Image 1 (cartoon, rainbow, N blue to C red):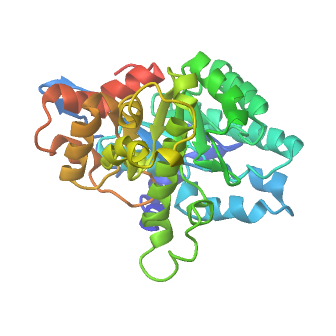
Image 2 (cartoon, rainbow, N blue to C red):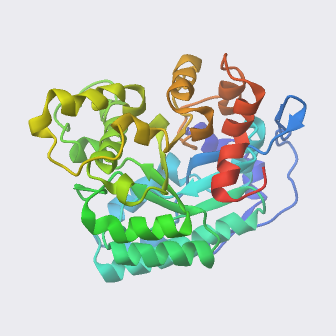
Length: 363
């Protein structure tokens, strides 16, 4: 979405970045009129649960470390598109009232001290972004998951002091499964706080072991690797017993949850066919039934894919996801409004109601 960087330059110039927060300005001329979405004559406040941002100030902290390149790559790309008037104009044109902002984790290999300082800078600046344009942005705490007890503290601080709605985490931690018992301290705190935990893939070709297979044409590291990583993360949360230990977790898988939600029935038969390969904890229900309690964004590209996701797991489990500012989808609201087979109540739930309930915001 390179065009977004030059789109509405006059609008972007009207917003002054203050310590990576945003100084408010009068509505600049020439912006697109805000689209107000209604379903069945009822105005709904649409919420996008999958939108990216980055914090420029973190570069000063990680300069000269192995993490500088990772942070700079986000800032120089679409993931670093600033929270400014041009961004709001895009939201207005798409009919998106609220974005929940996440920062893709690049810090899982950091020492405890550097991770703590990285969280402090990023969380404070993210909170400032959310407050600078009231009513339009929410934030996920960028927790240091490599230290689960620290991540639990950061999640609580982020939600209670900074107003975050949950946490954004990767689908693995330097190759370790997020379902590993050492992460139970974090999951316990997330369940206690009823935090929404948004899982987004990172370093997918490496963490899934398919780096050689996805070389060449087709952006396969992304289009195959990213959904695969999310699929593996969710599968381990099921089969390693995390979802039994913490049954009230609120988890949302990016990109429609990856491949798993559309092929879940194979999990139900796997252990019956290959019992010698299922030596983990005894599950309390069928594997596919756990997926019905998780949440997924709507970034599945076609009406048929969205209809299938709803039929498999229910409209109560789906929320808008755009992956902003990566240009995956045009018309994210129309994607939901125009999908056949949905009734008004289901459309309202996906556009607004589910996210409002999970994030405790007005719908």
